[in-house]
Image (tube, rainbow, N blue to C red):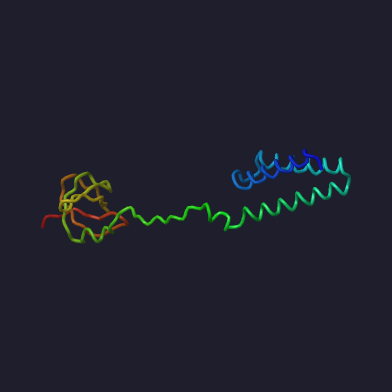
Length: 157
C-alpha cells in the first residue's frame, strides 16, 4: 500500500465521522467521504491487484462499521451530554394558593378579555369570561384558568 491510499482512507474516515456526528444527512462531507474511500479502494485494486484491493476494501468496511458502532452507541454520548434537570416553574406558587375564590379586587387595566387586577397589595393577570371590564371597576374572583384568575364585575345589590 502506498502512503496516498492510507491518506485517502484517513481523510475519508474523518469526513465520515464529520458526516455522522456534525452534519447528518447527505452533505458535502458524505460525498467527499464516499469519493475518498472509493478512490482508495480503486487505487489499491490498480496498484496491488485483486488481493490488495480486497484487503483495502475489507479494512475500509471494517473501519466504517467500527466507527458507526462507536459513535451511535449511547454510552459514547453520555460523557459529553448535559445532565442538568430544570426544575423551575413559570410561577413559583400556584395561583389558587395565592388568591381565593370570592375575593374582591380592582381592575388596573381594561380586561378585554385579559388584563391586570389588583387584589390586596398584589397585581395579578386576570381574565373576564363574558364581557369587557373597564379600568378601576370592582371585580370578584370566580375561578382559575391555568395561571390566570377568572373574574366577573361586581354588581351592586
